[in-house]
Image (tube, rainbow, N blue to C red; front, side, top):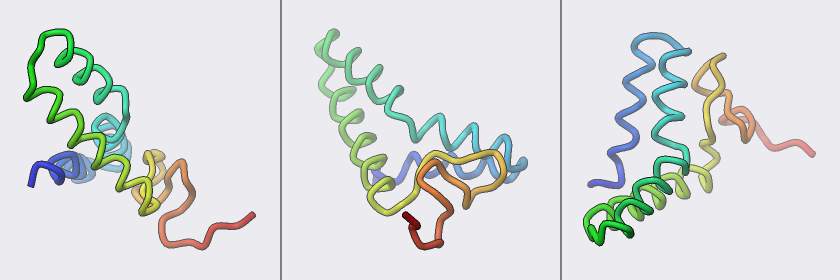
Amino acid sequence: MLILVPDAAMAGYLFGPRIGAICYNALHSYIGVGLLLTLGYLMAWDLAVALALIWAAHIGLDRALGYGLKHMSGFHDTHLGRIGQPVTK
C-alpha cells in the first residue's frame, strides 16, 4: 500500500490547480527520492532506502502510464502531454 502514498498529494487540488500542481510535483519528482536514498545509504538506515525505492517505483509507474509532472493549468496537463490525448509526432 505504500506505493500509493505519493498520490495523497492530489488532495492539493482541493485548493486549486496551482496548489495541486505544487503538491503533486513535490511528491512525484525524483529529487526527493534521491535525497531520501542518499540519506538512508549514508546513515545505514535500511527503512529509508526501502521507502525511497518504493517511492521511485511509484514515480516510474506513473511515467510509464503517461502521468507526468503537472502544469499549473490543470491536472490533465503534464510535461508528457495532455492525459487522455493521443501522442502526436
